[in-house]
Image (cartoon, rainbow, N blue to C red):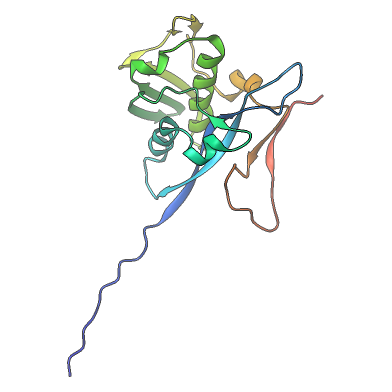
Length: 188
């Protein structure tokens, strides 16, 4: 008799990350939206988790997410390239191609900055973000003249979150029992 052993490859380990897109509606007359919303993505386990998350952010919402009601969209130009991310002492330096500042409109520019900041600061090793474009530090962003002379964090973009911002669980994440919800409220 012969015994044949078939090698099986275990499924790759995965991990969940959030990317932050813009969701239409849900606002008030004072703050009509769109607003930032965390969206769950599952990726192969990696040490370069911030890099993987920003690449997913640049890819944008899936066709199903874009067709949903209300629709998810991204202010990040699709032709943006991630050139690198370094993290040191709570500061992430995110280097993107110049396409990141193309287009126009103050809201669009603030939204794309916020999307990157929220995506990168979801990780406990990052509190603030400094932007570089094509390797050069950004002090004034885009033709809109957004001053970026210091690192930015989530608090710099709170006006792009709804009054009750649910950060966990993310849109599309599997719910667990008991359900734990976390976020920030600016209602008082």
